[in-house]
Image 1 (cartoon, rainbow, N blue to C red):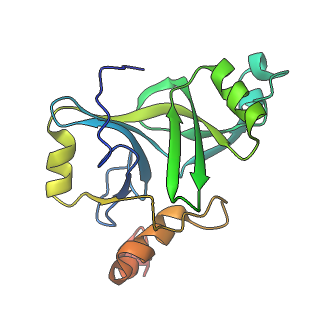
Image 2: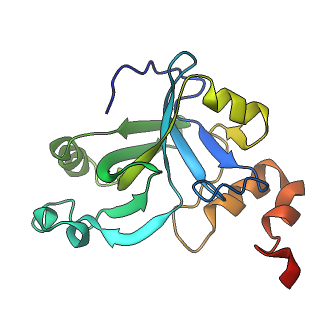
Length: 187
């Protein structure tokens, strides 16, 4: 990954939640974990609510005997969709701290997992990226809601539609749009 991004604590680690009116198929009903952001360079993150229902072992035989074999793979975004990006994160509830490791090598992911099994490791195919000014433009035009992770209840299982859950927490009045049928003519 490009390490030229400066990390800004006010945006890096934030969530971008697609507005219910965003119809771009790449990002419709998506939740993006923004891992890096610089107003002069752009932003970088991964879509965290699009599981591919595959594990690393199922995706590549090279993970067959790895401690990471059962790590789930998610669609991370439209850029570099042939790359696997490993991430790890951990919640510290008492301190209300979210620690993120983004774009880590396999050896680092294994080391983290062995040191603390409560660390969540995910793999992403591709990532989401914004050029200089692009994310700001999209935020100004209300394509996204920007939210801090702290204070949100973020379900970690697939039984809860993550995007809808977060929309309901930050803007409950928009649930009627979130629940609207894909094709209004079948309403």
